[in-house]
Image 1: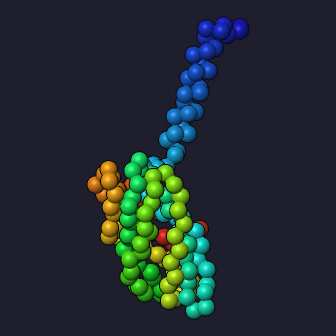
Image 2: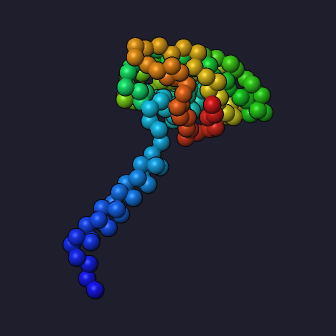
Image 3: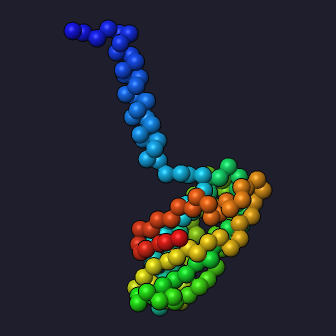
Length: 143
């Protein structure tokens, strides 16, 4: 039995739509801010951390400052600080680097406690904290 053209098209269309909706369901929400801890490089007795940041909003973020906690290798709070990620243009990647007076080996994880400052015209409430996606290539990054 051969499938007629009229029968095959709806089946093919259904298969394509099912595959597309499955792929879309696996896509992360990109309407918030994404922060990735990309690298932690020793600089003498200090640690320089590189973050890749993307603003997924339709509007630019004029200033984004996050309260951040560094934990030592014993799991104790080593430093509570504010990281100024500056301006984050809509839909664009930015790299921001920060240097801390601890060795990289002495930092076990980084906690983004929340947004301290988040400004920009046309941004929704909680633009820097709602939908915040965190990832790391080097050590635990939590939020």
